[in-house]
Length: 195
Image (cartoon, rainbow, N blue to C red; front, side, top):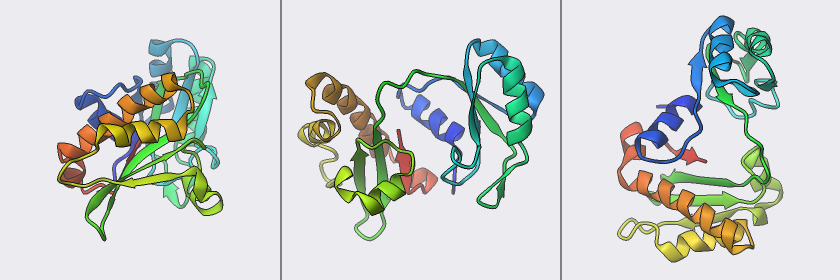
């Protein structure tokens, strides 16, 4: 079963992970209403089961509700990797000082959770893996013990050299581990979750 970004965020939210607010729209008018509710700059994001949404023009910043409506008009109905966009996620824009990727996949061969982190961010993570594999840390987790604190800290320091940032990412990685432990991935038959 594939789920959209907005659905994954709801799962994260239900399990106590901090997630930015956002609402879905299936019409440009609804995207405009949501943007008015949030005020300020928002991001209008295509919801399709495909990577590369941003490069395909499916993720755009809107500085006003009217612009959110215009962008939703362009995004809704567009095709990304052969898939038609029927829904957009409208969420407040955030200042991004630094970007990192943290994800968990279920390795079907070993039947284990494998954590992956990268200081190169999550956009084009497949390309990062192919061209610069040294920028991705993979950590298989022993299902008997789950993610151990020293492993989470090891990933934090792989992403950030300073203690403050490493400890901050530690909490996020532990959130992902907790989510995996409550069997959300098995329930949804997911192979990937990322923040």
